[in-house]
Image (cartoon, rainbow, N blue to C red; front, side, top):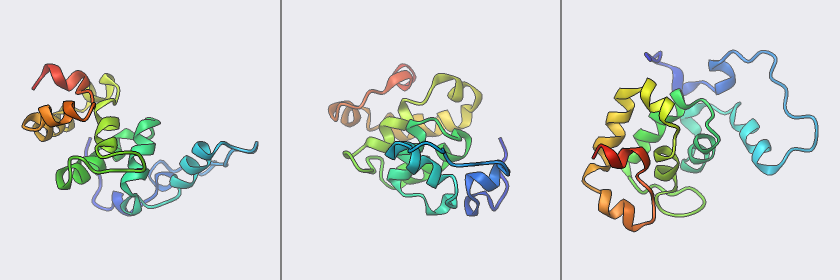
Length: 134
């Protein structure tokens, strides 16, 4: 998928042109409330925790996985709210259908983790489907 140059400056509501988006009416859980808030925030303002959360919920992966890869290139064990490597864990746990449709992103992640696979495993992070290819 080819992304336009300014996609990181936009929120997911803008990218997907969600003109009819309405937050949950019933009192939402903290998770639902935060995900709804993140839909309105420009992607370039997402923290590691924001990416971890939204990727874990499988929101808009075609935009969020490339952002996560950028963070993981800087720090493979980038930490959200839980532990070192929690962003990596959610990226590695992304459904196989997504990776099948995005082989270039799959290769980027596989290349990132190849030389550090023993360290990743020692932290208790499963390599998932990437374990078969590296």
